[in-house]
Image 1 (cartoon, helix red, strand yellow):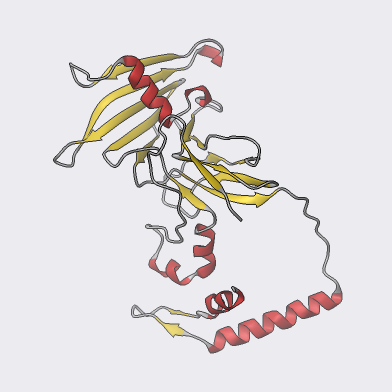
Image 2: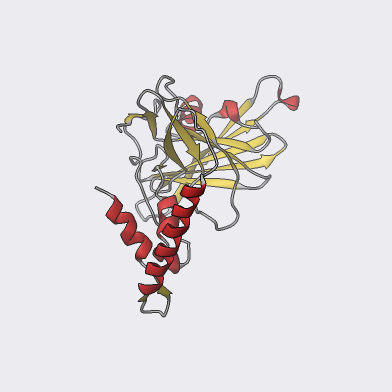
Length: 263
């Protein structure tokens, strides 16, 4: 199957391409010996923000309808320097115009207020803020067009379990006909924020066919075959054990069987 890519409309060509990654940096080391866990992590593709290597941002929910976006650039010495902030204030009752307050950290800014707001809008969707309260939509660097009959599912990054973990609204979009701009909508508590960096993924996508799925109970013959298969698998797994240098014993039988199924 082929999925076509097109760039963030505000910053075309900026940001890392989507990629598969089976490992997670903060999982225990023994997760490397769990092929089903790594297969879950590698489902689909990680998506990155439309940032250059010398750019970063931080978006925070301050509570009471206030959100602050801070845009930063790296200095020659490698430190991050805040350039400007955009504070979005939602109207009372969420009805009416929202305010966008721009503050420059330099007394002689090199860009205008309008440019600062435009830069912020390349990374977040102000119109989605506060739906529901605390919601922040992050834009991806890459959008997807799927083949006919296939949808794109937008999710948080799988198996990132370190706390705090911001919940995210998972959506499924018919990207074979709808030119959807990739976004990931997280829901924060007051005082929580999300950083954005060139090499830091902001979400994960995978693709599913848009077809009806029927389920039925197994027949007695099928159940008997499943039992025989299970017994055979666990017998072969028990006969194949490997000891790691740090004393963990595991069986690579599942991984070997999985690889043998592939053409």
